[in-house]
Length: 295
Image (cartoon, rainbow, N blue to C red; front, top):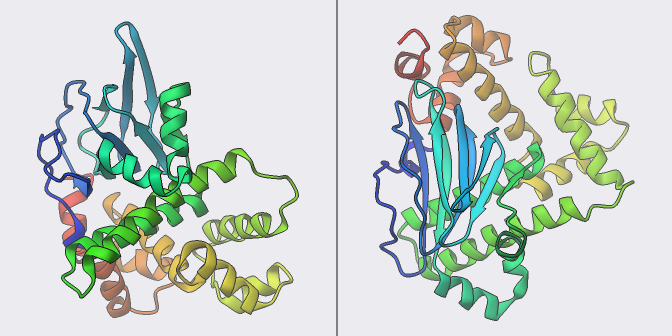
């Protein structure tokens, strides 16, 4: 995750902007906030940590959900909620997205397709969903794209920001809608999920585009397009991200950095160092020193 996109957490629970705000937070020793509600919609994508989300839709009602990476929450205005820190020593990472009623009304005038999750939350009190790995990375990429556009000062940034906003909201709604209305026997989705599973179970083995295509008896060009179209990144980039995540977990558990990068297929420390720093905004040693369990 690019360090420049990280937001410094504060306890402000109101919007400064009139349309939307989006944040990427990464904290340790996070203090549990009391239950609170907003006069805007909050969308939240959980990435990492040990927390339980409590939602209080009524005076005597309480729903608690142990959060897993890939959990997506959407709460409407007036619904109290808060994250309970079960282990504050662990890194707590998430995306948080706030959008005003007025901005939602404007988007709805363009298309009701933007409102699927909001309507479910308000009509059926459904607030939390779990995204499968492919869908999780797809939504995560849309959050990052919006954050990058907001932080840039390029020509047409206002127009691009609106496009990224619409893309994020539509992607979230389409992802959940497709999951809830999926048809059995979808060969392409099945193939993609099987490849994801194979990659995650073989991160310590050589993984090339040619080998994976041969494993599933399909063209390497087909696999390449499948990843680009679904995740917006190449198969190689996806494998690197997964290997970096495994390396991150290993070194924070106290494993040797040199043995870890070799174990997960990086040919030398220099290439591992550059990839790790690009992903997490600091060197492996700095990350281990900051987030290691012995600290």
